[in-house]
Amino acid sequence: MPVLTYLTTTHFDVGAIKVLPNEFRRLGITRPLFVTDVGVRAAGLLDRVLAAVPDSAGAPVFDGTPGNPTESATLQALALYRAERCDGVVCLGGGSSMDLGKAVALLAVSGEPLAQYDPMQGGGKKVRGVAPVICVPTTAGTGSEVSVGFVIILEDGRKLTFASPQFIPRSAVCDPELTLGLPPRMTAATGMDAITHCIEAVLAPTVNPPADGIGLDGLRRGWRAIEAAVANGTTDRQARWEMMMASTEGALAFVKGLGAVHAMSHAVGRRHDLKAHHGTLNALILPAVLRFNAAVCVEKYERLRQAMGLDAGADIAAAVARRNADIGLPSGLSAIGVTREMIPDLVPHALADLAHFGNPRKATAEEYAQLFIESL
Image 1 (spheres, rainbow, N blue to C red):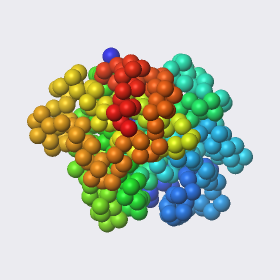
Image 2: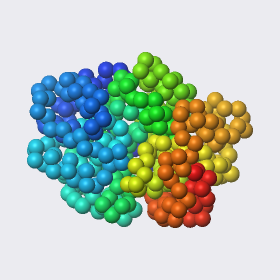
Image 3: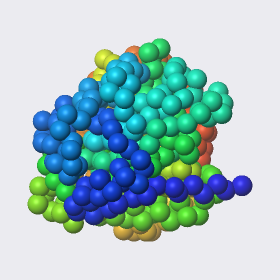
Image 4: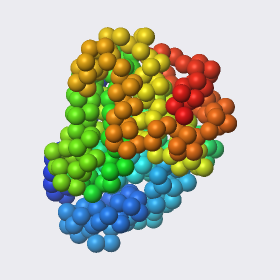
């Protein structure tokens, strides 16, 4: 039966960071650990957020979040959390910082090791509790501020998705103004991440009409605003607002599940030699998977076309490929270092990924190999 889970308190608008002190009081957080990365700190966004919080001088900060969050970085942040006697986590940044912060909050209460919480192995039953989490996104793509999951690369090389309603942040503070300085290439990549979330959520076969509606609205907003956000990202506040809403809605929608795009991007993203950005991977893989799913999603593709403002019967995969080119993304995976020789390594990880099971058309190992080839 459908399970409809929407539990996050979300504060959404320009200037929303001013609510942080009230959220600390509401959630009983007296000493938060701020989890971010060096880029967010260098951009001055950490200082802006700390300035909105009284008595924040000396607040513990972990800024070692890597581009693809790892178990080793999570344990470093957890050690700081414990040493500073923290009682909550504020995640400031993109999906990597938010995912790492969620993992810290889980381990702080439920304990190590992280692998025991793998949902594919019944790990959700082992979660005893999670420290309160507040997420403040500085990109518009992942939507992790409202999602049930997080993704971490484990020490053994697996990139696992951990999912449970207990992992939903207690509060999301979405201030589009924090994204105004995001460079065009990162705006494009994170924006296509949000668009992919909306599309894959709608296509997932789980029955959840509210999630479908949210996903279609997010797709409509993101598809119409992404070019302006990329071209005029420092001045077009409305475009930034629309992209952040598309990002948040994408994650609210993918409570239904995701699909083969994410299974494949997780398989590539786990490789340390590539250091590939998740949103970029999603954008480059999406056209091939849209072609693969077309025969089993006829009615849903019509709804996607309507949301995207495309003509009836238009080639959605071709439209996505054109949009990728228009906003400056690479033409395929080969441009970011993926080779045919890597495919035998990638396919088993795609097959084992949680998102694989949400695709409307189940792919075999041979079909994943072909999808990787088409995405090169």
